Image (tube, rainbow, N blue to C red; front, side):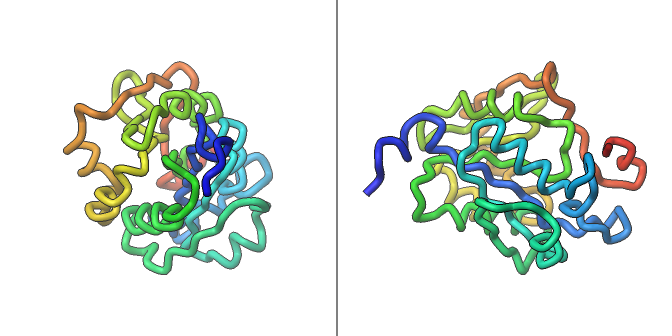
Length: 204
């Protein structure tokens, strides 16, 4: 039986961190293990989700998952193994949403491990736009859709059915574009990715 506390307001939204990638363009260095402020990047991303208001955090691991478990402080997180991580972000999104099935979560706030320029303020803004299981909310940067993205539970099955390769939920969001509520975050976050060696300059 769901308690009112577990299903009311933003407590109904779980943070879903996608951190399985192998860093192919980084010479095979998994992004989760890149150092940022002296700690693994995955640890930083979990902290951002929690400080932004996500009490429950699921983390999808893939490349060198055992090493990530050993090196990163992820206590209190639900760790989800994605054996198909090499197939792209879509497989991690499917695994993460699957791990939320049967829980009290009524929405998932999806966050990417390789965007350290996005902090708790953006998470808080997107989280605040949650209304129901029908919610579709996305951060925007100068009006352009980015991350984090919030998916109400009513959309999970459709997203899992269409998430393939590295496109994630892009096709689903395009199909439901009119239903997506954009929340401008360009004034509080920078939506760059850590994809190539040149991008490592963004890590501290």
